[in-house]
Image 1 (tube, helix red, strand yellow):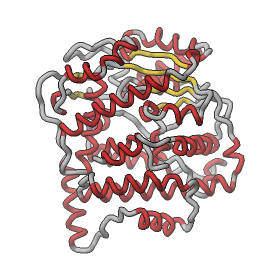
Image 2 (cartoon, rainbow, N blue to C red):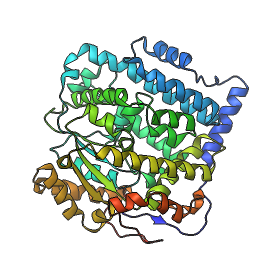
Image 3 (cartoon, rainbow, N blue to C red):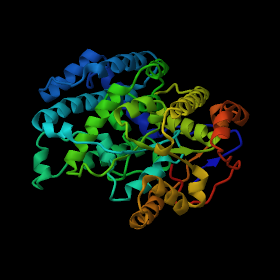
Image 4 (cartoon, rainbow, N blue to C red):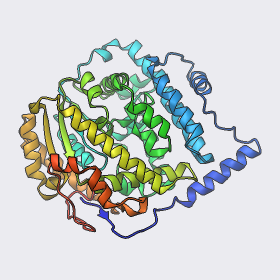
Length: 439
């Protein structure tokens, strides 16, 4: 499961030629007037979504506050290239259009908002600390409900989805997700080794927070420090309320029993535990822990590999500094929020324990959840085999390539290591794992 934390100075990877070609084509097209310039103001984006759908109800207007800050940061700090501005406009349009469609479903089917979300199991940990493998192992158990990747990309069904529900039409969203993933691999094939997935793979709910213009997804793809600091000072409860309503909509569209608890996970919860627990007060929380050198190095690599797609001015040292700061903040907020959580609602899982003995570790998790693990073992074993096929190339990274030193990381995150007895992984080791290096 472990990635290689290479201990010599190396240069961070470059983006693929595909992005350079696309950027030149877009720049030339805009120069000659064949392609319209990107419209990245709130007024234009809202008007564009209204014109495309014929709808005008975006739901709770709270999302406009983070949207204002994000757009200011995108225009003033991100230094996007032409491919970047094109992708940004498409992303904003997708989110806004989905918000308009969301209200259609709530108006037509008020029973959606009445669906209970009882006792969700929420996996919380720093980026790259094993949250994905825990999520996908639990998602293999049919006693839980989970999002699929196409649903976090496009959580909202289009009008006419009733035809899909009765088998008279096909849902376009998996095909759309497959196309988006193919483009993402062309833009940067390393995405497959960093976070392997497919349209139907279990996936985190980060896209449901993006629906409110909220979350670290924006920080991992664009250099937007003003937006990051603003979000860190705000109460995320409105974004989590909207996320919960989207879960209700997705459960309804899946024709899923509301009796099955949801399995949720995204590192964003490390920052927003009070908001999460405001909205899901009966949540049971699995905290994952890993050597912070690996966490910081892998998080910086993930962000770098996305940022270089959208900007010609990405600075690896700046990326490293930001994700060290962000990781430290995530951990400190998590540690503070846990003081108010009932001990019987939380369990800690170490990355290395899962590597060494996944069955024993999952048995402990199931004991915490009050469930017999035996019915789930077959599905978990199938997931492990599938993950080997998904994960073909190890994700390799180092602290050095992002201008960071091990000593600084260990010094700043020493309290975390001591508090949760986090084992330190050996330098340069590639721990053996049945999971194919999943995160």
